[in-house]
Amino acid sequence: MSRLCATFRVQRYSIPIRLISCAPLTVKDHHFFLGQLLNQFRAADPEQPYTKWMQEWPDAPLIRYRETGWAAEGLLINSAAAYRDVMHSHSCYAYQRSAPFRRLIGDIIGVGLVFAEGSEHCAQRKALGGLFTVANIKSYLPLLREKANRLVDEMSKADDGLVEMKQLYAKITLDVVGIFVLGEDLDNFECRTEFQTCYESMFDLSTAGMLLAAVNLAVPIRWIPLQANREFMDASKRLRQILTDMTEERIAAVEAKMGKQSSPTPIDLLTYMVETKYLAKIPGDRWTKQELIEQVLNFMATGHETTAGALTFATHQLGLCPDVVAKLRQEATSLPGSPSFSDIESLPYLDAVMKECLRLNPPVAGIPRVAQTDTVVAGHFIPRGTTLMPVPAVIHRNPALWGHDVEQFRPQRWIDDPVTGGAVHKEMYAWVAFGHGPRACIGRALAALNFKVVVLALVRNFELDSLDRGKLPVVNPSGQLRPKGEVWLRVTKVGEKV
Image 1: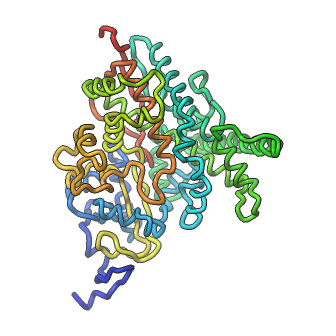
Image 2: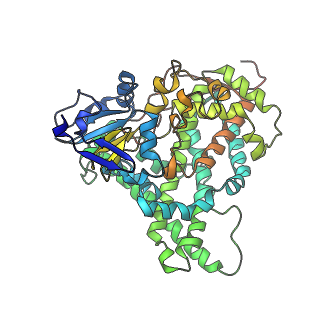
Image 3: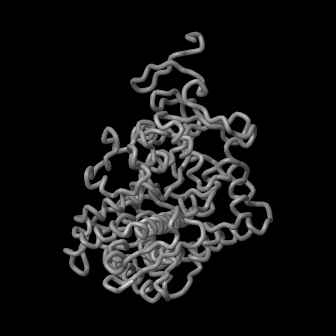
């Protein structure tokens, strides 16, 4: 065996090199050429079959599987230690987003911060960081409350108390992100905007559309003139054109006001980028108009869709747990009618419910990363070019990390242990809903505040009852966990007889 091994040194490691096939456990049920693509497309959701493998080998740090192609291999990250090695600040830029993932969502979200790598990502995140400070996020609270109250009004008008939550959440989160990113209230509650139409065309695919999306993961086929492709690409092009027009108008408006008055508070992302990057005094710091558009595409898509999905799954879960709703309402009784940021952040049970909802239904299904150099993960040698797959649901539902009640919705675990939710060994990397390290979600504070404001408004005003008593079906393939079809809820005004 020693003749097959060499010595590999990285940082302080000194371990034997072995073929990747010699180290982790290996999944055998792959197609000889398509690898796991068929199994992934046939699965109930984009988190499968990864969660199935985890359940079979909960203690394995890595699980090897076959990707599309004769020799392409991937490694599922199956432990907190492996996740930490890949996402840690000292190593995260050694891994880049995979080409199939770029094809899956690139036409939807553009090529801004999400797809930036290395020093480019560092520079972009630093440039945008000033907008995501707690102080600036707090300034949006009145707008978030206004939208949550509008949501309550819309739900109160429903016949027989029946409301379809998926569309309502798409509207409110698009409005919130529209204000934050564009500085404009899209008012999707008043009328159906092109934004909502375009995003539905790209996210809610037909069966043919999902099949094409799955094939596109392996081979680029968006150019083929099929109806599903045309509908998807037409929506993508129209969305890009709308945001291009808005960006050009904003550039002209900011240039016209230069030296006349300061920007409003809170300042929106587009205005902020025009002022600080497009019109930067140092030429090397400037961003082009196209770079602004790509960033706007990034934040419009990811900012509203992930939060809308998280709220939909959370409300469905609350509709199954009246005792949790009652505890939330009781906790909120001490708050004023318009609670402040500190009021909201002082509610431990609300925070626990949010974390537990995101544990069981993390918005991001998984972002595959490709090792750019030979490296070491969880003690295993990883050759350059290997795809590593971090799937939040795999970490969040691993009984080796969370114990025997891992599948139970139990917010109390976060009350008993606010930092790690009672994860084994108090491992902070056992909860990865927003990621960790330099590539963690930059919009975490806004998303969390929006989530809490909406949930507070709901439990203060309604009793919730989910019509679907089982697990919600989801769109597959998808880079995000998105409910498939309509999600219905029956609401009853607090104090009214059911």
